[in-house]
Length: 149
Image (cartoon, rainbow, N blue to C red; front, side):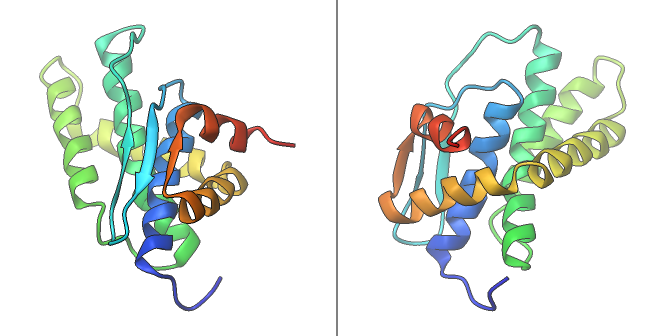
């Protein structure tokens, strides 16, 4: 692990974490991009999930994956994952209104996200490198990078 990472590299790890984990949990990715300044976006189109509960649970895992990937790969806690954690908490609260406990859902989603990131580090690194080089990748390009041999 290097000592210093540029904002662009950190954003690439963060967004690659979202994109790779999304694909691994069956959530399609339209495009992922990083900007010249810190920050980026993983675009996920509306898709048909088995149920709203399944969509929200998968969404929570994807929301949390970016910050986890960035922290694992750079060794520094992500400064940009606050909104991601808030999105996950909002989904957990919505599910809690249907009888499930929000804190338990959030904790489990965090565990699943961490496991998915840990088992996908080579793919996340490949996607992040391509993001640093190109700035924007289509979902198909992310998929090809993930499953390249």
